[in-house]
Length: 317
Length: 317
Image (cartoon, rainbow over all chains, first blue to last red; front, side, top):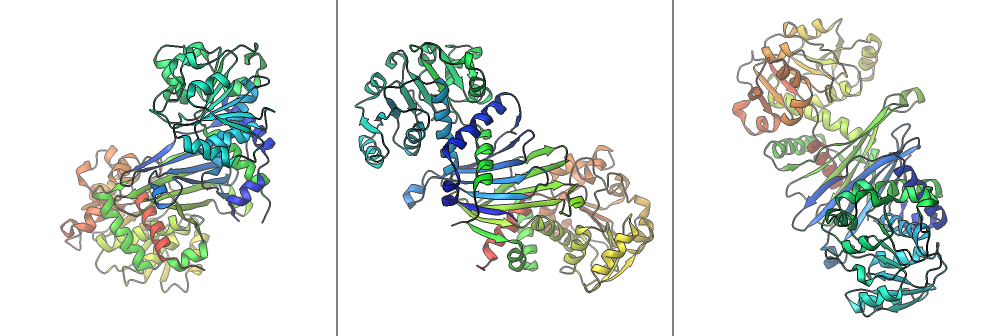
């Protein structure tokens, strides 16, 4: 019997500590070559514009394989609908039976992205951050902040977005979050006053340049998840001591680091996969003055791990 | 709200005449270039052996797109489970919302395959067949026979399979089907006494050769749905007056006709797509003595059409 698991049930099922643990194991599996992920399937629509991505695969030796469908239709908000949607399917790897359908409406993708940001901060960020800086004011801005609480005690935060009203709205929405949230006048102020920065925008132009960054800063960039997008100028990579990516294969194609490679600012050998960083403490920050970057484009193993965790955690309603 | 539609509800929803009409329109759309179908996604497993195919796409201008997941795990019967399973997802093409999940357990794939066989017989078969010959004794053998009732009044049938007991079981299972079913001693007898033949086996060696076939016979071959499979020897194509395929693109790669092309028995120009045959009556049988073939490998537009039809026909339970 195929289980149908709705969004509320999914939210109740997931314990943040277990999500972080499952994703860490997933990143290690990925970097050590134990994850089978065929090329992403894709449909593209015009009028109204939209697209659909199908990501799927499995961890070698695991009991399940996962298929994730994600859609983005950018005019939906005009009709009062969210622009993103989707679901995940979990199948038995032994029998091919569909074991569960997770009607998560895209929430699991947001969650695994935010959890990966927390993992990057845990392994690469300052030991005791003074202030968290969030660039962007959308869903991922809120969720990154929300998930950082599981890896740091820092509760000072600062937000910057192009639209000041949206930044104010984020502050209001998160007034009970336990964070003290300030609003930066501009990106320069955010970078000057924060040492654990997360960029979460769909920008197609670099927002942060090398001269913005102070020694000791860590930046996680999660916005550039497709070709043409960029949040960090190549010069930031030139100044960084450690450059981490979730997937070398993907980060050659897109993401901020692909620009740095194209511009010849850093050689590919400088990019370290997150899974290797989790496994090998010698690769991590060794001096509080170091500048570090994590460029996260989102990998299917995150979907595989979180979907499997939901299946194993959700109790019958 | 995503609708979850189970197998019993799906079976109640589908009217055979409407399925045939929808698939005919789909084959025409496909042959006239209005169907967008990216390459099939694929996962392959060892120990236990199995695979998963993801087919997806849409008809240009339609309101939905469809993703079909089909799994095959060939040791499942040892555990009392069917070897095939799967489901279909129907999304709005305007908003990307998942509108329905069809938990059909693979039944819709069997159904669209059988319905395509009926369509091939309708447009290419003898006007008044004397006897239907079914090669194979599995699910598709039963379903092809079942669906031919909608396109012919012939109720004389003959079955042959390698396993005589299974042939006997098919006859017993279908005793209330309205067909008078005989069992052939061998393939030669089946071919000699039938003029509307459907082959439904997973054979990897040709079963029917040119010298088996009488003038006036039509053969639909549905078994060779992947590389390495073959039911009709190339010589049958050499003797045929009309050779129809569901998809030229696929039938260049696999299916019985790909062997005939490789062996140089017929040139590719001799292959006519089913959608063209449906549209153009000049391409059909014009003499009762002609020998005709339909090589059906299964195309994603069939999945798209039948899933959309279920969504539009299923009433709330």
